[in-house]
Image 1: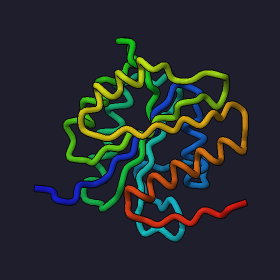
Image 2: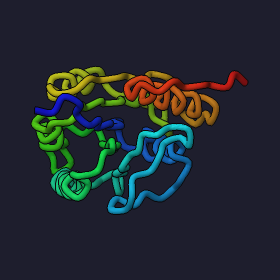
Image 3: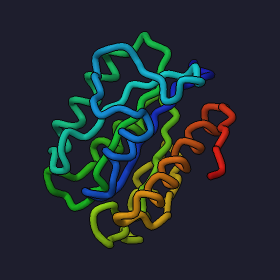
Length: 181
């Protein structure tokens, strides 16, 4: 029995909501190598992560699920947390993420869904029914909504990134020092 399950963080949003950019800002890098050593989110943190970013906004869910499974299997023995990004698509198409959510529900991970409510690219927000559907489908996990409106605002985007970082830190039990500017 696993009394200290590993953490699995999932950054969820619609295409162009800024998921990739959020991950890049969090880890201060542009490229992530799935089959190399885990990386730190912050130099002062001792916790490490494997980051799996969505290759493109229109990646088929089956392909993404296979990629997620292979990365988790490869890093089974490592003491690390995982961070994934998912496009919130629940329309029964080839991009629908229900299979991925089912896989996360059946996993032994502690799952945390970080929902990016507003789009970076255009003035759109996630529809309430999609959030409700996610709540219904994510049986094994907690959902954290980041509702700051960030459309084309670098300052507001950076504030949302800091909110995500603080949430991860709290979950991992790490005190975060935020510089007031």
